[in-house]
Length: 100
Image 1: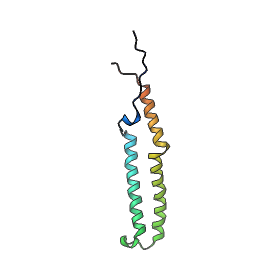
Image 2: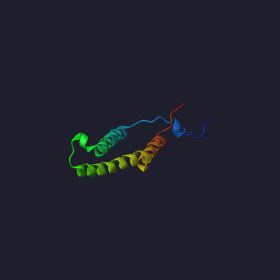
Image 3: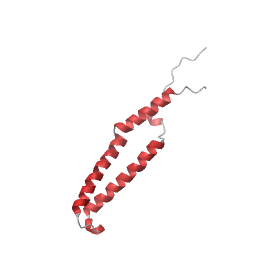
Image 4: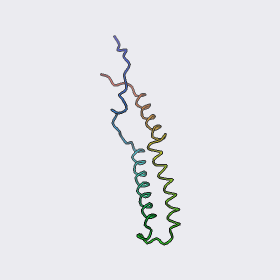
């Protein structure tokens, strides 16, 4: 007799988080962007402590890095992260079931 039970997927909380090659690269770039943003923010607060005479260039760079930091947060929290998770789940669903 064949087994007709439908396998159930474990809840998302029980699936361990694994970073693939693409996700690890994204994590490294994200950390670099956020560290750069924090450093530029501190420089903008105290430009004389790092020897910057023209604050306007620093503020321009801070604005550019702020948009990169926003993109980083959007990637990890927004739809790009969900899209990667969905693709991983679809890949797991297309694999044949393991024999018991």
